[in-house]
Image 1 (cartoon, rainbow, N blue to C red):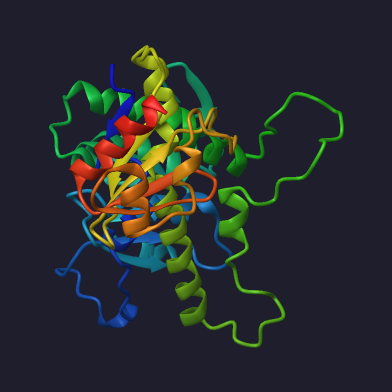
Image 2: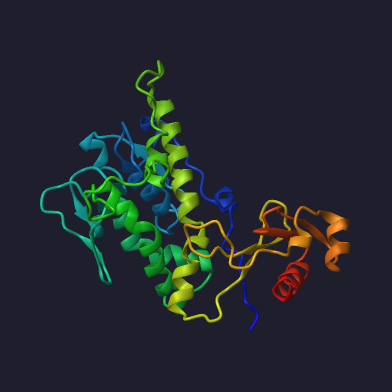
Length: 318
């Protein structure tokens, strides 16, 4: 069995550049008959509404919708969808707040964590988004598998952090502090309180960056490889993933890590290839079109798919 997984979605770090770009116009210039408008609160932002706004704009109903950031209830009432503000959860009316008293919506499927606004958007639109990314119908079995895997590996943490739920049931001091998770990185994009420019324009620009950051990680399908591998009971385990680099149009062969939070590869690319490039690498490997192999052996590149698959096949034997 060839232990290689080929995809144009997994391990695609440049997916961000083809995602919808937020577009804003002043509220008084917006026509109610124009493109759809999605609202969330202004002021300090968090990961859940940034990710929620990004995801809802991937749907057919709200494709490339304008994002309106306000707490004005009269303005919110005129919008096509509202999330993380307004005190209402009503999917029929596309209202997705989770702060109101009595809110207890969960994802289901064995997950009982109370949802954030991002979790609500994912619950109601996640299958549609995944199906569009995979270019298949929503009833395709891969959609359901990814729908659950994405929640477990990515979305649940967003919901838990936003609702103030500790990751571990312990009173012991952690061995180290991790302040670089997605929610914290989004939070750090807020304007500094000592910044002299606290304008709505600058705040909205920061929120746009937060949407792009959260969205790029949501679309980074490599996070879900381990979940799918376990569910599909793939044995022996995958060693390499092939994907096309959208920017250079070249093909990459990446070694799968031994675990999601580990740097070590299950089978790094051969030592004799590492650090070599172009003709020198092609000569050493005997494979035409080679571009590079990283010094650590975790990734390499070739000009063509055929070359990349040849590199993976050869690496499995070395």
